[in-house]
View (cartoon, rainbow, N blue to C red):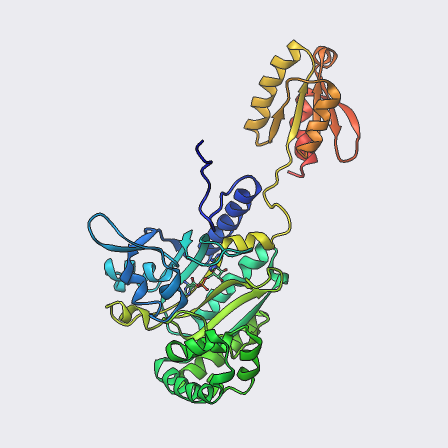
Length: 417
Ligand code: HAM
C-alpha cells in the first residue's frame, strides 16, 4: 500500500485563520512602508550560492549549517535564499542603481533555513523586510526603527515586545575588540560550553549572546565592545539614542547584542518578546555599510530590518480580519429566489452575506451563530407579501421587522459603517 505523502519537516501550510493573519501582517506592513516612501522589491527565491556565502560570513550559522544548497542541471551552485538583504544588494549592484539613491525597498516572501523546527522556527518561513540604501548612519536608522515601531503598534504586538539596540562599530574597531575578547576567553576556555569553544576559533563575538549558563557567567566579566567604538560609531549611536527619545520609543542598550551575520557595522537592533519561548527575536536588523563593497560594488551606506511573519502572527491575539457576516435565511421557494436577488444586491453594497438554503430554522440559526454572524435576515411568505424582512441581531437577540428598502441602511448602522 502506498504511504500518504506529507509536507516536509519544518514547512507548513497556510490555511484558514493562518492565511488571514499572514495576509493581514503583510498588507499592514506594505501600506505602512508606502507611507514612509518604500517601494516593493521582488527578488528570486534562489540565487547563486556565493551571494549568501560571501556576505553572511563563512563562520555564520546560516552559511555553515542552514543553507539549502544544490547544483542545478547546468552545474551551477544555487541556494534557496535564507534572508533578503544579500539578494536586494545583489539587485542594486546588478541594475546599476547608484544614481537613484536613496533607495527604499520593502519586501515580503518565503525564506529557507535548515534549522531544528520548533514553535516559531521553521525551515520555510516568511519575512517582511525594509532596506534603506544611501544615507549614512543616524537619522536613517531612526526612520527604520520608527517604521518597525509603528508596524508593531498597528499589529497590536508592541506591548508584548521590547527594543534592544547596540553598536558593534566598524570593521577596524571590531578587529581590535575581537583580539581583546579572544584573549579574555582563552583564559576561561576550559569552562566554556562546547559550542562556544568551537566559536572561539571562528566567530568569538557570537559567544556574547550565548544562552548557555556557563557562558553567561563568563560573559559577565568580558571586555565591552562599547569601549572600543571609534568616534564615528559613537556619534551615530548617541544621535540615534537621542532621536529615539524624541520619538518616545522605549529601548534598552544591550551590549551583548551582536547579531549573527557578518555584514553588520555600527547600529544593530532587535525587537524581542517573552511570549514565544526561545524564539524571542521578532524583528531584527542593523546597518550594513560594508556589504556593497563585499559584493564587488562601490561603497553604499545602508540599513534595514526583517521580521518573521509567523512570529508576529503568533503574538497577535485576535484574528484581525475576522469579518462578521449577515446570515440570509429564506423560508419557502419564493423567498429563496428573492434572497438570491437580495444577496447579490447587499454583496454589491459591501456586506458579507452567508446565504443558507436548507435545514430547519433552529439548525440554520445555530450555523449563523457558529459563523459568528452579526445578524440574521429572515424572509418568508408573509415578509414577502408585506415587503419587509425580519432582522435578528445575534449579539442581543433583539428582533424587529424592517422595510426591505430600509435594510441596507439598517445593516450599515449595525456595522457602524
Ligand atoms: P535575521 O535575524 O536572520 O535577520 O532574521 C530576521 C527575522 O526573521 C528574525 O527576527 C525572526 O523573526 C525571523 N526568523 C529568522 N529565522 C526564522 C525561522 N527559522 N523561522 C521563523 N522565523 C525566523 C535577517 O534575516 C536580516 N536579513 C535582517 C536585515 C535586513 N538586516 C538588515 N536588513
